[in-house]
Image (cartoon, rainbow, N blue to C red; front, side, top):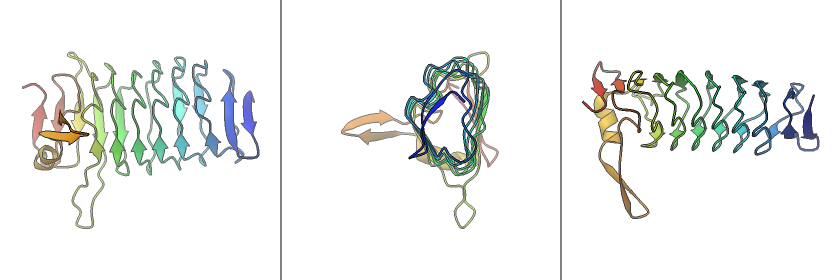
Length: 218
């Protein structure tokens, strides 16, 4: 099916434009850059795959449809970056890590981030003028209180637009949010400002679980 596979390890090494990934249980790993710059339009990834590796589908500008595996735990750096026609994605429950530049410069309109996610790193949803709605699902402690993931201050850098700003729907309170994401932090001796809007365009709105709101730039 137009795939080069190392059968001894169950690793898909390279796919071509008309590739169909086998769904017979033989594939458990994808190699880095296995579809990068390939003209594939749709892909279904087997459920046994737990990591989409770096650059796996980067620059697949014809890609419009992706079905992610149910056992997915990590989206590695730039794995879907610059897929300029990718307009929809469903992130599976159980996903933990969204690394840098994962969906940078894609064409997503909305995204729901499962409560299982612990890390949303820099530019993972950056440079998307099309993005208008981001919903974080709740992850709670034993007392039912929302547990906040780590979200980089530039996770949504340059996303949204003046005409179509992002609405963030968050399952924690405004007080929790400002405690976690306002102010500054130090990394390797350099002081950075925490951005409570994660770099999103001016005009973006945050709706909190306690009914409070914030508007970026106002």
